[in-house]
Image: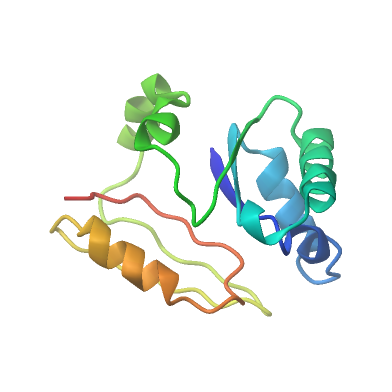
Amino acid sequence: MLSLVDAETVLSHAKNVDYGMIVERQVAGADLVILNKTDLVSPAQRDDVRSWMARRSPRAGIVETVEAAVPVEIVLGQHSSEWPEALSTVSPGGFKARAAPPFTSWSFRTERPLSAERLGRMMDELPGSILRAKGILHIA
């Protein structure tokens, strides 16, 4: 599993009474952590975040990024041999979104591949309050 972590906000999100445990579980379950926005924190803050992540997921690889710029080979290379079997267990009909307060959920399904450029622009426009996004994407 890959987790994208915001270096600026992860420690404060982890302390949140409502969803802090979810943040911790996302890091603890990760095989690969993309530590994003490292340009917006001091070296000491970055080290604090890395130490916090290492305590929760000592086996996870950590890749530091700016604007989530990480080579796709790194993302796809992490346990990629296990993915076809895992993805084959997804039932026809897709996923059903579940949500519980204080969360909201949204899902989208299409038969057409997504444009990487358009998806990137859309992700850039998401509000800072977005805590988690997940999915299986077919990128053109």
